[in-house]
Image (cartoon, rainbow over all chains, first blue to last red; front, side, top):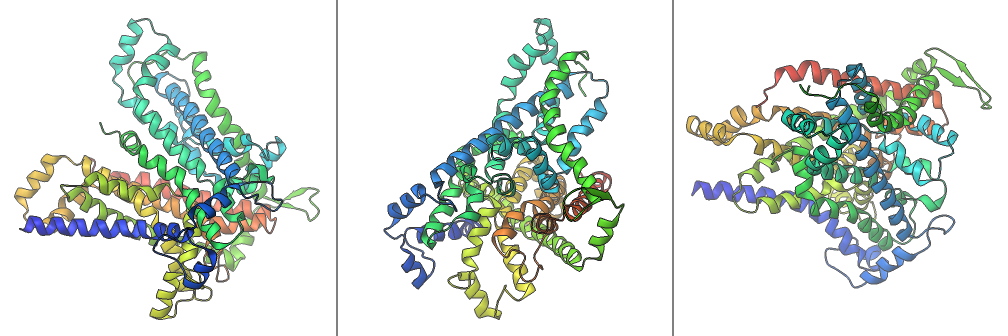
Length: 273
Length: 292
């Protein structure tokens, strides 16, 4: 009986928690399927209306921006390029750097370690204007390269890969050496297949990190052609239901990725088997 | 470190080069420029800069707005850490308790983590708008809530907006921490101590200390840096700069005011704060907690 009561209590708390998460998003979604005059008269809605297709199609295809040069569809394309670029570039470079740090007897290993890992303490927000002026000097403002590379300058994934490599048994390298594998072959044929879970987890983490960038795209893109979805929130105009629809669509890609790939993400980050 | 390694050779630099190259050009070079900005003053026409020692720093210490931002950032990170940590822990403990539906609960609580702070801010905006915001009207009925004018009310607004998605992150990490505790420890404690409330605080919670301190750092970093998008889409600092974080103020001074010297000095102050927190974490806390 007590078992039943405590377990009902747990379910109750969890359901309240879920409601706090779901209800606000649901209300914006429900409201986005109504007409603007309905919202202006009656406020946010709890139930679905019948303007879903009308509102969402218009938002996706409408030429927005100050100069009417960009559609929401193009912003999604830009965000996708930026997020995948950040994910791939940072994961590949981190994978390699962590390999050198763990598997080589490097001379100034401690110094190198600090040169790489102290950068975690200096997020982009702390060096945003100088980074911008570096980009301007290198002529990289208004380019995908400019959106991607400064965000990829991160050693967070390196830290995770380094921790993971350290748990790999020494016997693996010993047997690989007996098989005559050189450093490159060991990396590609042995270590990368072994790190698959961790690689997927870091790709998800960095994709969401790249997609969610707000301040940097705002600063580094003056041409509307390079606007991304999240910064577009600041720029969007139009009636209230169209803004609701845009907000709803902006959160779909990262949420979908986290829910669909949840198992891999959690497995990698927490290294549970 | 590994016992078996490759001998040092030129190939190690090939593995290091991509990341080191990106860090040097896009991270170290800007950091050096930050220091240069912080110790120089641009002349009014942008022709050059003069070295002014600590003038930019003295200037920000004289600025009452800096202390307002400082005070707000401290309160904001403290309250966000407390709220998201305790709610995240409460939910994680319940999710770890239930027999059925554990993974469904996990999925339903995990997704807000993925939403961008700026998107959360825009959503919060709709719930706190004077025209049709539900929370605005609820709180207005209760105590005359008006975030445009009351500092306390504007704090409530940005704290709710800032905490919402961060509960998810705390939940995920606490749940993983709880699941990592060995079954045998829990079973043994069940024999020794019948009171589940006391059992939690004397056995389980101390074993969660590594997770807790990790999350404290994560939450403080979040409140310091990631909330830019939230502030910029909710109060924009209203009323009169009371809800500006240090990052937000530095950005506004550099961008709107074109005062790169002040922005640089403010950045260096924040680097120092981050450094102090990190050293504190390593020196003081790491030595005092249990790892299982």
